[in-house]
Each structure stands twice: as C-alpha cells, then as structure tokens.
Image (cartoon, rainbow, N blue to C red):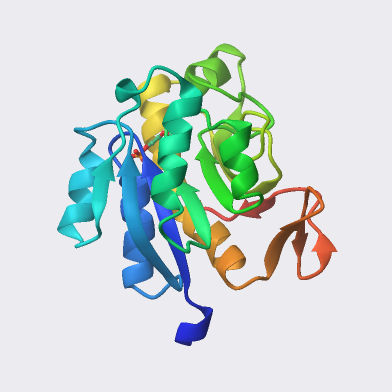
Length: 218
Ligand code: GRF
C-alpha cells in the first residue's frame, strides 16, 4: 500500500460505534488504506466518541437537539464536514436521515451499513421484522447513500440463517458481528477505486455491479 492511494474519511455515528471501531482496527492493521480524520456524533454521550478519543481521532458532537429542524442540522453538519477535504463519509450507526441537500454535496461518496438484506426491511426494527416475516435468512448490507432511504446501490451483503431460538436481540448481535466484517470489504473496494459509483450505478472493475457481492462468512 503506498500513501498516494490512502483515502480520508469522516465517520458519522449516533451510538456504540462498534462498526467505527472495526473500521479503525482495519485501518490500523493496514487491511484498508484509510485515515479517519474526524468522528462526528449527533448524540453527545455516544460511546463511539470515546472510542475515537481512545484512538486519538478528533471527535465531537453536533447535537441535532440544538436545531429546530432537519435542514438546519444538516446545514451545520455540512459546514463542519466541508472544513475537511474528505474522500468518503462513512455512516456507522448514524441514526439520522440526511437531507437531499446534504447527500447531493457528496454524491456517491456516502456509505452506510444497514442491518438487513436490502431491499428487504429498510428503516428500523429490521431484526424483528425479519423474524415476524418467517424469514430463514437475514443479514446486513453496505450501500451507497442516495436520497431514497436505505435505497442506494448495494455493494456487499453478509447473510446468516435465522435460528428457531433467535429473538431480535440475539439476531442483532449475530448480524453485528457480520457488519464488522463486511464494512471494511466494501471500503477496500472503494478506496482502491476498483468499485466506483457513476451514473447512479456501481461499477466493479468497469463492469456494472447488478447484484451486491456476497460476503463469505468466516
Ligand atoms: C448497526 O446495527 C448498524 O447497522 C445500525 O445501527 C447499529 C450501530 O451499531 N445502523 P454500532 O454503533 O456500529 O455499534
């Protein structure tokens, strides 16, 4: 890995930040050629802020409660982010819906992880929804963020069976372990430019990626 191919990213979080930690660890282990420049949380006491501080990564909060509406919050967030020349914005458990104004400033450069096999179960409570629907399989997806909620082009998915004894909590814990494995794989491809977003589509080594890659669970 040479330093010219190193990319910068800003991570947005709202909570525990275990996905953030997995990405930081992958960068430290040189699995991905990425520098997380800053971590921003919309929740002041998010554990992920502490994780960032422990890794000497600048971290701060832009509290959505300080703003009366979504547009003003996103404007402020955007102003903070525009202070950096970042290559990617990594949503790692960021529980806010970004406005089109925000997304359009970073078209194709915002990545998210979602705890379901998209396009199934966008939005919240994905684990319970999958159990209630009697699904045999569940998992997680890394995708590009577009204006459509959890609806952008899908990069990679990790799939696990739903066990008879699973409840939403046990399933969430097993899916989270897979999340930690697949996010870095998606980032690896984006950082190396093997995977690019163009014309509302994803291109892997110049071929259109029509279906998400399937991550082989270790
Ligand atoms: C993950 O399940 C992520 O997919 C979802 O929120 C959770 C965040 O977990 N959007 P963490 O903060 O990364 O531990």
